[in-house]
Image (cartoon, rainbow, N blue to C red; front, side, top):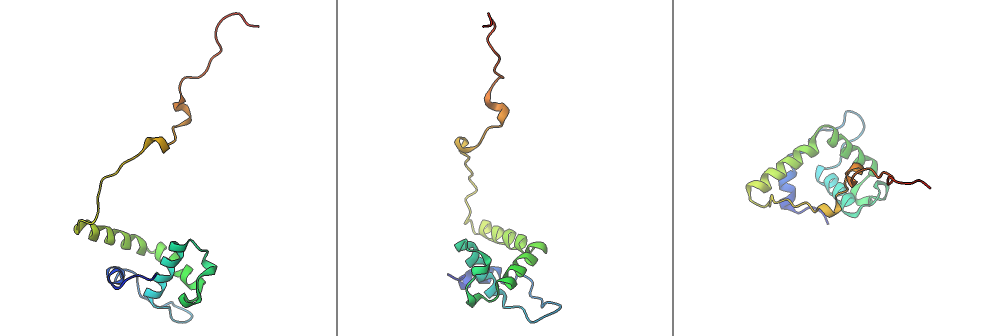
Length: 119
């Protein structure tokens, strides 16, 4: 399922739209974002990307480049700020300690043999 027009309108201005220095033209940003979303949504390997999204290598390179230049951080912080401004976020956090592992030394005192006659 590709992104909706409303979702695209929120993130469309954030990724850079510059052409590569060498080689051919880049695919449209929206197609690449749809390809990246498909990959994370399905959990599929990059090499199994459907042909309609183009070359998996191109998508992988764009994902990596955008991670390096901070694009994904900008997308995240912008979407977070927009959601917070629209009061779409609930900032309540709960932690269930039954699933949090204790440190190995938190189990208690070291076991020492009982004092008394040794056998």
